[in-house]
Length: 201
Image 1: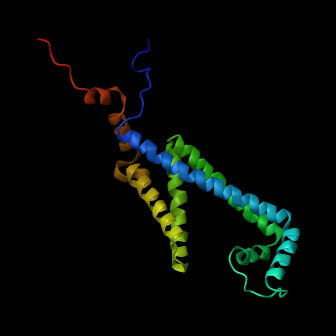
Image 2 (image 1 turned 120 degrees about the vertical axis):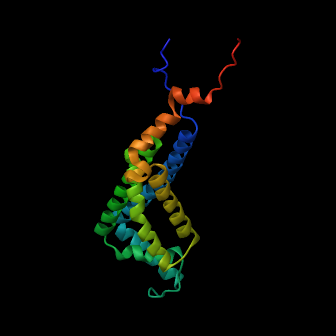
Image 3 (image 1 turned 90 degrees about the vertical axis):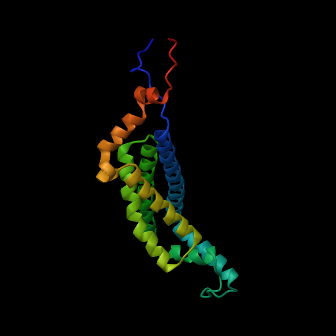
């Protein structure tokens, strides 16, 4: 039989809650990875077939505008798609590489948070914090539900990681966090939570 020190105890209580929160953030990052990877593939595809796509697009726009290529009445996705062809194939490849690099960063965050690694908490905090000013700037240009929800989620992640996980020495830092984990886990925590058996004497 293994000794009690050899038995791996399951996470419980507040530590289990922290575990779930980190995994929720990891799922959010997994969604980002899927979206960014898809966008990178689209950019690489456009770069590879840039001339053919532009020819087909011009034909479609010519038909929709009644034979006037300079008409700007077409809006929506087709109207916005015109901006893609302002970039050369080289620029699209460079943009695709940048998007792919960001997807790799998000994948690293996803893996580390899912495994509850301390370095992933720092990486996620820094990466998310750097995005907040850009998201605020986007709101000054135009307000939408998607932008507001994204900003609120990212701010919540930043606040949670900084204060609940005690990053950068906040609320006692790493040492206090490790003491908290030790206090809330292990056999001592189980013994404290287990009622004493009544004495038969």
